[in-house]
Image 1 (cartoon, helix red, strand yellow):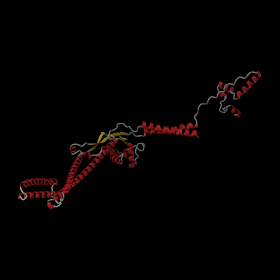
Image 2 (tube, rainbow, N blue to C red):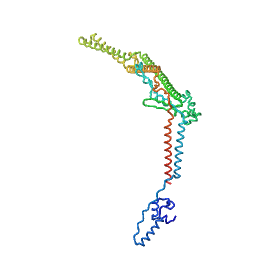
Image 3 (cartoon, helix red, strand yellow):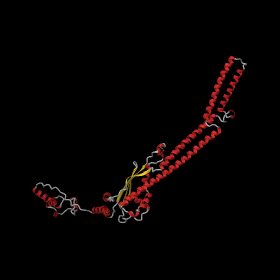
Image 4 (cartoon, rainbow, N blue to C red):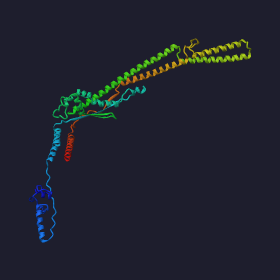
Length: 442
C-alpha cells in the first residue's frame, strides 16, 4: 500500500473491501471518494473540463465509511467458553449424576422432649415449704441434656445399642459423600454424628427436638429411641445423685443440730448444778418477795415505835424492844440486799453476783432455744429429703415420640444441585471478572 494513500485514507487497502465485492451503489461511492484513486482521477478530469469551459467545478460527494464486518469469535472467547464448561457445567453435571445415581436415600426420624419437675405437695407443704430447697432447676437439666446428646459418651452409648459403623458404612464406597468410611475411629464417628443428628433447643421453654437420619427408616427411629432412653437414664442419674446428696446433707445437718442441742442442755445443767439455782429469774423473784415482806414489817415496826414513843417515856422497856425489832429488820434487809451483788456465801448468796448469773443463764437459755430451733429445722429438712427420695422429682416428658418415616427426605437433590450450580457460577463469574480486569490493565 502506498504511504500517501494511507495518509489520505484512514482505512488501509488491505482492510478495505474490493469494488467487486461491493454493491453497485457502494462501488459508485467508492469511485467518487475524494481520497481514493478513482476519486482523484475524476477530480482531475473535472478540473480540466472546468478550466476549458471556464465554469466552476461541482462539489465533491460526501465520503461514507465502509460497512463493518460481522463479529467473529476470537481466541479469548473460546477460552472463556471452555473455562465455563470446565468450571461450571462439568462439575454440575457430575454432581447431578452423583446425586441421582449414587447417593443413597436417607430417612429422618424426629423426637421431642423436655425436663419436667414434679411439684412438691402433701406433707412437705406442712413442713414449712422447705421442699423448694431440695430440687434443682429444670432449665439447667435441659442445658445438660443438650450438651450430653452431642457428646462422645452419647455416641458410644448409641453405638453400643446400634452398630453405627455397620449401618452408615454400608453404602461405602459408592456413596462416598454421605456414607461413613469403614475404618472410621471414634473421633471420626463423633464428627459424623453431627451430620446425622440435628438438635433444636429453646432455652426459654426448655424444649428439645432431636432429628436423626439413616439409610433405613427403622434405624433412624432406633437412633432417636436410643437418644431418648439415654437422656432419661441421665436424668435419673442426676436425680439419684441429687437425692443422695440431699439425704447426706440433711443427715449431717441433723447430727450437728443434735450435738449442738446436747451441748446447750449440758451447759445449762452444769450451771444449775454449780449455782444450785434452777431458774435465776424465779429465784430472784422469791428474794424480792422476802425483801418486800421485810419492808412491810419494817414499816409496821416503825409505826409501832412511833406510837409507843408518844405515850410512854424513854425508859419504857417496850420502847427499847420496839427499837430492837426495828434494828433487826433493818439488818436483815441489808443482808438480803447484799445477796444480790455479794459473792460471800456467808450471807446466803451463791458465791456469785446475781447480775452475772442472770446474764449467764440468759445466754445459755438463748443457746438452748437456738439449738432446739436448729434441730427442728434439720429434722424437717430430713423429712423433706426422705419424701423427695421416695419419688421421682424430675423426669423426661416426651411430647413427640420417635417417628417412623415412610418417604426418603434426604438428600435434598434439587436443593443441593441448585446450590452447587449457583456457587460454581459465582466462582466462574468472579474468575472471569478478575481475568478481564487484569487484561484491561495490562
